[in-house]
Image (tube, rainbow, N blue to C red; front, side, top):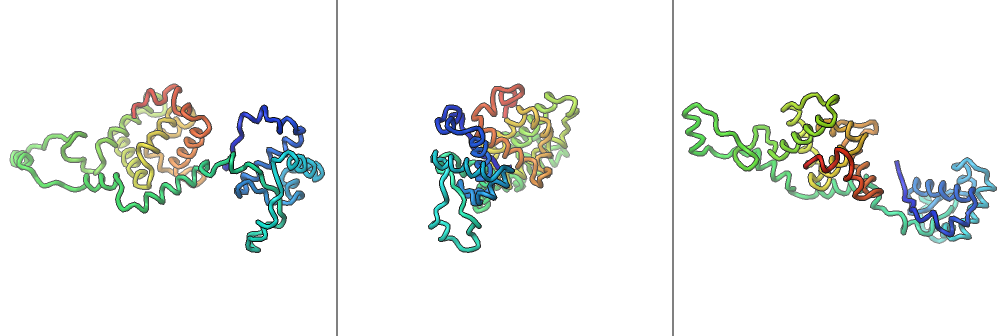
Length: 289
């Protein structure tokens, strides 16, 4: 779903005050069409086509468009600019363009495009930190004298820790295991009726899911953790991410659940700033990741 910015200063804007109720309604609907067309504020439709999209009388639309032009909010699309386009790209009619669209709306608001660029940038890198870490973990080090002594005595070697030692047999970094355990314990405490137990399998599956996300180009510290901090604080999303392995499941739109979560988090961050991740019950203060 596409969206555009509307600023609170509109309340006291003299141009808005000069509009009739009908013209203001058409102004908002025209913004919706411009956002939908995604052509830097252009509405490449005739007045008749605009009236049909708004389900309004053509005379009312024509009068309000004239008012918006007089206020300097919109202007007719330049004939010369359209003429330079190939016949395939030319609209059937010239239409209108918002005067300050690029000043008020930003390409960076498109979360999907940013995620796509981030993935492409990661794919072009020959080696990422996480790939290097994974390669290091799966390499089996040569036996040390200490390990040989334990083998001769038929004793298991000392257990490894996150600070050193042999990595787990499944090759998942201890910090991801710890992260997964912390997340699931937090969700169990917050939703005891929905999360009955936290098994080692659930912890390992969750750590593996996070590892797969990092391999797909999602950075752990700047994307995954902030999005999850926000999710556990949100009333709706907290119930949607009861397990980390569920982040890989496809939603109704065909995208993995984490992609939808990240998009919503980025949208809330743009709209509400820091408030989207702090100051909420069960939020960042209670989730130490």
